Length: 296
Ligand code: GRG
Image 1 (cartoon, rainbow, N blue to C red):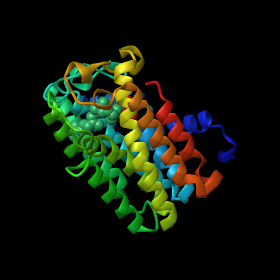
Image 2: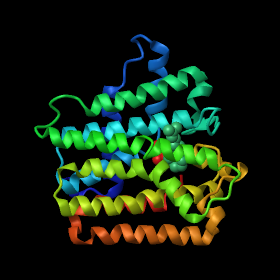
Image 3: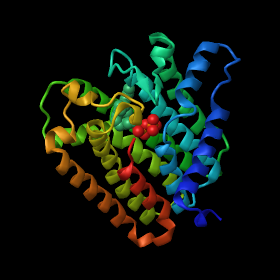
Image 4: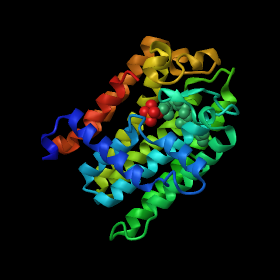
């Protein structure tokens, strides 16, 4: 049934599914502390493309990973992602008033609440993924926790964010830019796919890793292109911000056309590693297209 769905329907089905899982795991707004819980829900629910969750589900389909564990991993990665956006928007970081087409968390609430929202979403992610008896194979669950922790911390997203904040107004060469993006954005995208692959064999896992490395970087190259080409209304966040803040990007370093060519190369490399799996890797292939052809 699932394999006959076209990509748009498959994506919709899984976006609804992850929305339900997130709704279930987030604390209710009626429970104390109400403001924090309301701000957590405001920051997570009803927004975002859910690309990381979709990557997790798509890799899980290829690798036949346990469904309950995949739901938990998909929710955990979206919670970490939402926390990173809340903190990134704060005045002490990227200072942005708009996120997912609405006021960013610290604007809607206040700075202290936004800080706590990020903290609480991060720990909730690990609480959800470490839920006892999610699957018979505890080793798979521990591998997922390890993947998510490494991708979120200093050797992943937080480390990349530190390099990013330090790079404003500086000239980075292409290698340094790539390292920054692999950590800041790529690591969590890779972890999303790799967590979904936890039930697979070694050939599948290696292919998903190579696919995710390419697609994680492609995601950021496209983000840099969109920051130059798209408008604020379409993006749901402030467009042109990187150039305004003299941040090095793929467009500023390579030029617009070369950045597009690079994204295309990464897309082709991502597809190439999936070739041996034929139809089984269909959703990962379709997601690569979605990520590289997105307009927001
Ligand atoms: C605060 C530790 C810490 C890290 C922040 C990811 C990040 C690091 C900052 C976000 C800044 C940014 C806009 C990066 C570009 C790539 C990116 C992560 C875009 C947003 O992700 P989407 O497009 O967002 O998947 P949605 O809203 O669809 O979930």
